[in-house]
Image 1 (cartoon, one colour):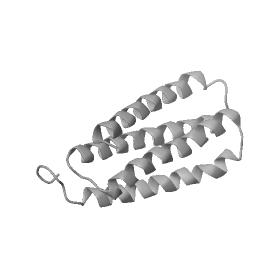
Image 2 (image 1 turned 120 degrees about the horizontal axis):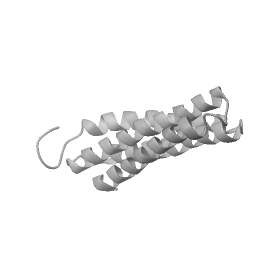
Image 3 (image 1 turned 180 degrees about the vertical axis):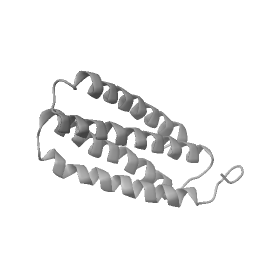
Image 4 (image 1 turned 30 degrees about the vertical axis):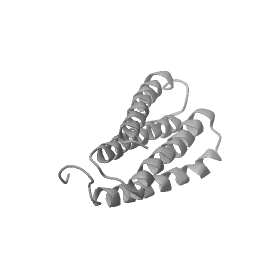
Length: 131
């Protein structure tokens, strides 16, 4: 995927994270218990962290970094966000407990993404000076 596409995806996920955070703080505060609200906020925070990570993937791609590691990083951050944050949003709103059993798969994807990003950042650049 192109660097610009990863940046767009990161920006969209970042905007959704802000919206989710505001919804949690204002729309859910009176509707769910404190623990569920905390879980919802965790989902929004991790979504934002990894939206920014996707923007970093896009910037590295635009700076000429290429290769499997950068692609693995981007896809891991995206899938991790969908699985980790998605299951936590669902768990906090619906109370469906088995969603919590799936959440760690998203966390593992995040870890893979960070390792892959570290590898990709150390690789050769095809254009321009080293970052």
